[in-house]
Structure formats: structure tokens, C-alpha cells
Length: 158
Image (cartoon, rainbow, N blue to C red; front, side, top):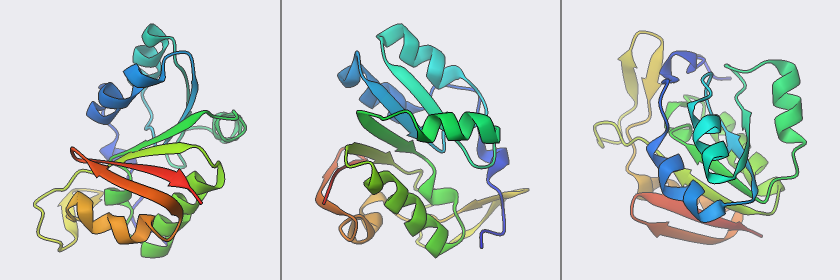
């Protein structure tokens, strides 16, 4: 079970991964897994004509999370989330949740110090400190296609 909630890692800014992916998804419905407590990503998405639903176990209400999970997305984004989950099984469960939808999934992770050694990064925050490519073997267990491109992993379901 995850020891730290990661709630304090949520920033009130448009995520760089969102800026990279959403312009390609105009007119689509997108599920943002672990999207945080702020609406900067939703506001940015709306300006692009993207309907963005945010699911965040620690930062959104039960009602909002249920609505997000039921949105029937055309694509999923999961940015800087896997790197703050301190429980390996919880991380795999989140990846499995993304795969369940059978749509294109776009993952980015914050690599921290890239040491591969997990640590507390600030009060109430934890970082896995893996390089992006270190996640690829795990993605390959859940997706038929896993492409690593410019600090982003794009996955297609099995």
C-alpha cells in the first residue's frame, strides 16, 4: 500500500506532457490519470477543443473521479504520476487501469536525480528517480505496443 499520498506533488500549472500531447488530440475526449488538484490542464485542454476529464485518487472528489473514469476516453494521459507512487504494485495497478481502456496512452515521468534510487524528495513527497526507459519493461506487460520517443512513452493496448 502506498505510504505517501503524493497529494503535495500537485502543481498549479499546465503539465509539460500535456502541452506535448493535447495539441495532437483536438476534438477528442481525454482522461488525465493522476491529473492533480488544479484545473490548469483542463483550461488549457478546453482552449484546444479537447474534453479533458481528470482522475486523481488523492486530489479529486469521489464524484469527480467516478465521472472521469466513466468518460469513455479516446486517449489517456498520465504525466509525472508513476514516479511518485512508492508502492510497486500500486504503480502496476495504475498502468493496468490505463490499459483497460484500450486506447492510446501517453506517459511521461519526472526522472528526479536519475539514480534509480527512490527517496523522499521533500516533505510528504517521494520520487522513484528512474529514467523514463526504466519503465518500459513494465509497460510491455500491459500494452502490445510501447514506443519511447523524446522523454515520452506512447502505449497501445493488447
